[in-house]
Length: 483
Image (cartoon, rainbow, N blue to C red):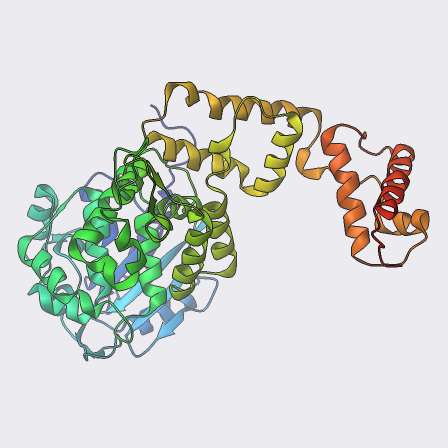
């Protein structure tokens, strides 16, 4: 398809041109190199990111100040003197390009800390401290020369191999997060992890825990795996399990393996979940992806066999699973909003699949209100869930029928916005009572009357009559609401 509109990476090209021009006839000329993902992705024929990573044998902090003072950036750079690193946003046309400048360095790590001792080094030393050979390509921005210092970057890119620049146990000891990154790259690019690197990951898994690595960094890398397209997400999860990395940060998932389900389920809980990931649309949010990943995590803890050898029950697994999700996400330092949204999807994940055509419109409206803002995500989650089971023929059209019924009902009235025609002040005036829990009961009664179709939205006159009758019936029943 012919591309229309501006080149989305035009800003990156302009930024490189401006960097080149700004460093001519300076000590940085011929000593400034593009490095990392932009060269890797270009070699793989993939879309390029909008960020630039550069390394220099000069002082990167001095270069960042020089670029700011020459007007290439509107904001003073963020400087990290301990690591010889600077971050700045380079003006390039209508947009800004994030640039990381790094002083070539060597690093020495301690067993109980992620923070290394850093000393200035050569370009070769800087290349060897990096995570994988595929990320070690360099391109001199002044001469255009492409350097493969390890001699393995280009062959590994061509052959789909994920290899460390130095002995793998050193690479993973230095930064344990690289073990998760290996899984992500293998899943994202369809690469194979080189044998000695895989052996080192399986040997060094215990390093993937505080204080050597922070929970926040583990979360960030795990979320990047979860954000991959469904088949790649699936492979990432399979590699996390096989390597035993999963044991270190999400041990709650391990009982899913081998937890058989019976009935319509041809897979155990783990394989069912991985199969469901294949149906994920690429555009789905990370919250929804995690909701699908964990929708059945409560099943092993609630599994109970029945008298029928083929029948298995998981009573209450949605609620148990939601509690587990809150604990896991809390440990990994997700935000309160993320924890709320993912646990809500797990809590509600059974609701749409329970629909039957004989339900009344009022029952469907209550379902809409129970699902609330999660309704659309729950439709996607349920479709993915059902794709991984042998759904009986008589149930296969139910989800689509429910979608159509909900759309028809919402076309008549926004079901989520249905409320009592009378507010609390009006209710107190009509009933001649003060504040109290009876006001909530009264509002709920009137809202339910609207949902049931016995009261029109906004019909205050009819609402008064229904309210007074409800109040009298309540008194006759012997209850005495507070005054």
